[in-house]
Image (spheres, one colour):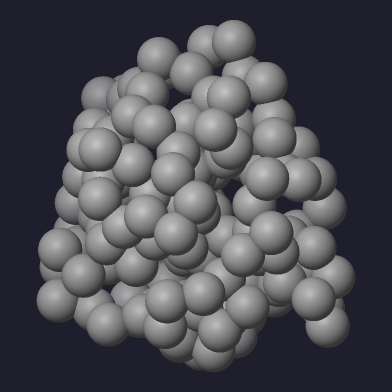
Length: 157
């Protein structure tokens, strides 16, 4: 991972994801084939969000004491029984490739270039992502377009 080049200073990094305005398990995001976002995806997003504010550690996979971008996604998905490749450049192949415009909460977005993936995040909905950014800010929430996403992968159908 070349995460250290991917810093994004989000002064509101303590923000939490609140879907309390939803009346059911659907959202404004593009729904999956059955018309709803699965509960597992929502659970995964909410699980990931509890680590916002924790430290970034290059090469780490510990959600509390420190992880890098792919260590964050690796450990969050492992909690739900999904096995991802360890590096961001390989995680792009850990599920079904989808268009960036098709992302749903729980999908992975990738940054860098198509031939040189350098950063991975979890899409949480409403145009936002959660990720282990850099040592200066740790695990934060950012707009998905803080950089241009170059690929997306759906691990949970």
